[in-house]
Length: 206
Image (cartoon, rainbow, N blue to C red):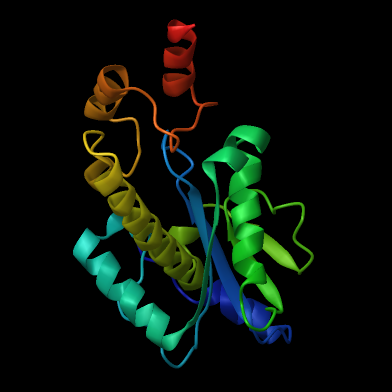
């Protein structure tokens, strides 16, 4: 299977769209922590080697690529909080984080490449949804990498304040040890109360 390429970007550029941003989010599946999105505008002359879907890269490689991307590309990272996730649902919250990431770019892009099959409804810029975009578009792959590295750093930081849940390794995903810790240690303010593993424990305590 070939990795991502620059063809989506080149097609948009051939139509006169100069600034193309790839947009992706990470953190829909965890039961703790925010959902994080990134928007990245690559410089076609300075694309880092080895960009790929963040899930296909080692942590060390992701971190090195994220550092390089911050140096050679325009990068914006944004989040939606646990409170927002519980209030509006994870899909809307991930779209909110995407909109915030796009809004955080210094200059608005001409066109957005959004990972997935939906365009966030509050986006006002021209956009196209790209299914499995992080494995097909270099700009979306770049966004997936910086979003993942940023969110993992947040979860490592939160793990220092709430030891025992393993967030430094599970990033808030409902691993077996994380679910066991929920039962043993209880629920923190960083847990998503609308998610089944947390919700069910809350109801058991009633």
